[in-house]
Image (cartoon, rainbow, N blue to C red; front, side, top):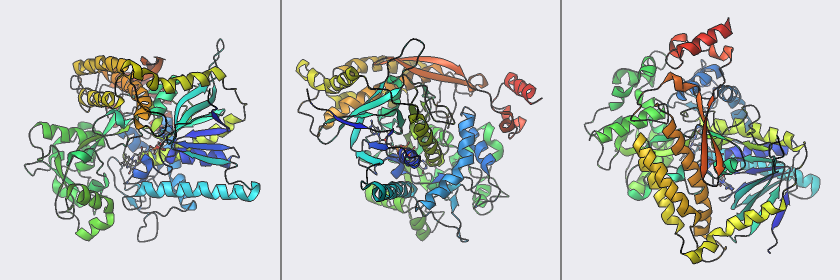
Length: 636
Ligand code: FAD
């Protein structure tokens, strides 16, 4: 048997995007020996791709902004299904986390008076997104990495070893979490994890009492997505298999504006900043169709004429915002309807035009990446002509069910932060709320993971390590039985999810999807790869497929169960939002390798002082009379 590389840490952070880096920095600041593991190259994560900005109610662009307004916007965006405590912590702590980044060396764009500039985004009452042009994520990652390096230099000065307290393991994919075996009435606790290095395939184990999952999203289970190759839902699946639960998995965000042409780049994101900075949506008749799609719950907050919408950009206090800036779920559905009604653009999208609204030099200054992206990839000059855009699978609201304050899952020692965690965004995330989410809860996860590490070190069960090795090698041993090519199975899975559990859902289609997933499960168990463990993308995918399948089952089952339309879950057969469903969480747990159990759970009622931040007239649109009555009694 081969020797397995072995490391021991206090805190292991899986994922090196914003959530993972912020968690690792915090754990190290608490004096813990910390490892950061990333499947991709260090520095390559979704966080780097974030364009628009980071939402925080600093009130620089409009002094009326504060955490309460941000909290309200976030709850509205999520259609009141959010975990309100997470939404509260997020709104309260986001400004401090942005300021803190500047102490790490970040430099956000400035207002004329030298304050951090803030831009408009859908669903945010005031300009709120701190940004660096349209490359905000790059600055975020750059400064978090810089902070890691500066901590390593401090450690070197003290110990003579840069990596004595914080070490990065890049291009290393984690495939298993280890837990202690449960005694009667006892929950298994985290003891470590296992994975392989992508270049030479060598195995590695990390023994640690605290693990933070910060693995990002699941978009690669869909054929049209803004997500990149590594977003196969690994953290979601690892958590399930370790005994944790996932919530809100039926809610996926289809970003309204992805590129639709040429086919090779279909799905790549077109930032919401284009609309935030004045871009308008038109159909093939030249109509600004969003005015026809303002839902009742938002009617008072959006302009009713183009003139009013246009005036809002310069006089936001006396006009209402244009409907292009409705939350993403609304805009994505509207585009979908226009295309279906035959009013789409030549390549099956709609037109997004900023060229008639801003001078070329202004576009080049505010949206340099978008200009470059369209020129290079589609030969479109966005300073002179409209873009063609359509919905793309972008973000998963669902994720690991965590304690809002500590970010710990139901498995002792297992924490989750960033996109892999569930609850914060309810049924729909507002743009810009992810970068702030991952800073706020990344820090909290790191802090509590560090504290948890003081409670002792459960030992890894040696036979679990052997099992992990065997499972990882399985795709090689099935080769002789003529198993399937993982790339083919992946394609089938993506097509199934895209076509049958996509932006608009129907009962019979989802039932068909679940049947197909059963078949895909059988095929996944027998995928086979040839060659050896030295850089073998087929093998890597074979292992990822397990996760994609489990996550897709959660999405499919939860979507079939929820008989209403809300946020990122739209049912053709149940087209309206149903107050009886508002407080219902659908909780997924794993029963076996590819079996999911779905249970219902009541949301905890909102704390009275937060509840008081809303007008009763608005709450009536979301809550049942009975719930409101209950709250009144609570207040009295
Ligand atoms: P990520 O940044 O996705 O990082 C995940 C990390 O986990 C990576 O390092 C990956 O390699 C690692 N990993 C995954 N699986 C494993 C494994 N098995 N083993 C080891 N490592 C693993 N949000 C905003 O708020 N504002 C924006 O302007 C914005 N723009 C966006 C633009 C694009 C194109 C995209 C795709 C998203 C955008 N988002 C935006 C969303 C936001 O970027 C992401 O939700 C957020 O960055 C997720 O951060 P994270 O730290 O949770 O995970």
